[in-house]
Image (cartoon, rainbow, N blue to C red; front, side, top):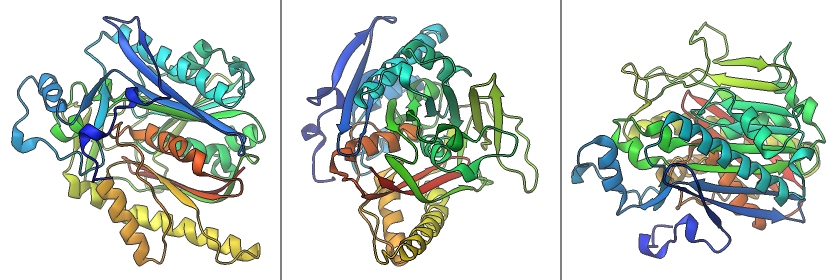
Length: 415
């Protein structure tokens, strides 16, 4: 990964299979989408981004524009070392234009992901989308309607920061996550056609941030893949874990409904149902006190926040997985590949090293050099980029983690 210079690594828009168009919003906004299908697995999807592309040389000028002052050279991050060479940002837009842009972007992604699975949008029974800061409270419903999905299709919005898409996948696969009195998403969608992933307009979200690291790390990104729960993806072992960020190492403004109440022994997640078919899973965040969208500790703070608990959760799921394999007479069988959230390369590398100390080792490829940190969209994009290398019967581990703090880790069987 590191040996490639930024000049050698193309932007997402320059990839041969990316379909690029200019949306007629404001002065025109570029969107690119790539479709991926693995016919042996019976699974496909689509991913992409929107806005202007900035590489590591042009990014400081953009960040300076956002800050209203030049970014000091001493605060320019070595993003290549962190695994990122490009990211996408939208221009300054009105609230109305941001809404129109992200609904259109989402609708195009839904249609492309459905088609990659051989489905028409009207056939899709569920749309589960992770997002850190939705442009509107009914965003998923608006996207589903514009994409041509049925009104009775189940829509689930998952607000667990970078863990949102994996929280959504866990909900779709694991009936044990259901809350009494609420719709059991996994039971409702078992054997049905479902799109799962993340759509993150992080350029809009960070546009008023003052945190220089956040402005350099984050960018727009989106990805959705098709799941027929229990058929083309089967849950083997999994865990959903909450661990409140008392120190505020990664503070994030909640742009979605949440009571902001905490009680001993009570989940940080609140579940709301709008009508009969739109469910919102809203996670409690440690919010910045000054009203800013995001405030980050340094990189060591991110390591402290995510690596220790992340290793614990992955280790627990791996032990569950090994016990199941032994029960099935497949003792010694291992995970073929892990799809981890791309927070940054150093975090994932350290996590892998810590897992080795626990006797756990499996491939954890770095796949998102041309997106930056795209929060809940990253695992969906990484999975789709790895999809052609996955064979029927392979065992895959999904490792999601995000501010809050939230973790969703699953071992699954493919095809």
